[in-house]
Each structure stands twice: as structure tokens, then as C-alpha cells.
Image 1 (spheres, one colour):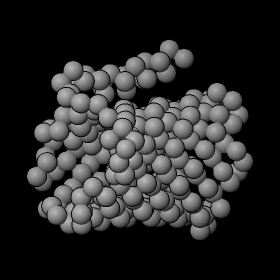
Image 2 (tube, one colour):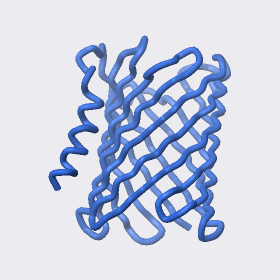
Image 3 (cartoon, one colour):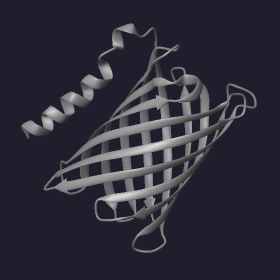
Length: 213
């Protein structure tokens, strides 16, 4: 248990080192509906829709549609190719088409699960230049009961091209409730720190409904 507490402490520290430099705080709400279709024992396909509200829950921000094709390379490693389409409501004509590739590693022991995900994005934004981004994420899960799990993860976003360098840090505290083999519910708090020119902090309540067919 002491090892797990150390992991959690490191993740939290990574996100709060530069909090004092931030200029403002906002409350947001991110929502996800994920539907996963198994093609066979190794290949799966996931469709997702995600509406988001920002500015202290007063303004619609983004709606995102996501498709993911995954391949289970082993019991621990999964490879994926994905595509996102995003539209921002507060900027007329601001759409984004995003391709991404990722590798994900998860290792479980007893009630503990440690994971690492590395995602690389190619972003085509209508009113801006082509951009690329790297997103490493470290996660830890602990099973409180047979159906309830607590998760903590830290994701760092590195931009290339125009915004080269550290863009964001996202820390997520999540509770997962397995309803049955086909349905899982998630309720989370997300701490999001924007760096570079914006240098702001957002707090988000995140809900996710996962359906497994």
C-alpha cells in the first residue's frame, strides 16, 4: 500500500507544481458515451460522443465524435488507431479533424492495476495550421469492491509545430462502477492546467457511460 501512495503522490505533484502562476479558474463539465463492439477476441471498435460545457457551466464548448479501432496485442498491450471530429460552439466555423495512434499497457495484481498510455495526434484545425501532439498518461487503479474501482491518472500534453512544448497537464480522480458485463459508469473530477500563453486552470466534472456489446 505504501508503494501505491507514493505513486499517487507523484502524480498529484506533477500537476500542481506551477499552480501559483495561473491566472484564473473555471468549472467545466465533460460527458462521454462510449459504445464498444467486439469484432473478435483481439479486435474491437469503439464509437464515442462527447459534449462539453465550460465557463462555469454557462457556455457550450465542444462536441466531439470519436472512432477507435483497437487490437489486443497481448493480455497487457493494446494498439489503436483513432479518428476524432470536433466542433467548437463559441468560434464560428472552428472544426477539427484529428487522427491519432496509441499504445496502451496495463498490468494487474490483486486489487491493483497500473497502466501507461502513449498517444500521438495529427490535428487538422480549420482556422489554424496543422499541428501534432504527444500525450503520455500514467494511471493507477484500486478495486474498492468487486464492482467499484477508484482510479487516478496524470496526462501530460506536449505540442509540436507552432505550440512546441508543454501545453497541458490533466489529473483525473475517477470512480468506476461496473453495473453488469455490458455497462460501466464513471464519475470523475479533473484538474486541468493550461500552460504557455493561456496559463489558466480548469476544474471539470466528468461523466462517462461505457457500453460493451
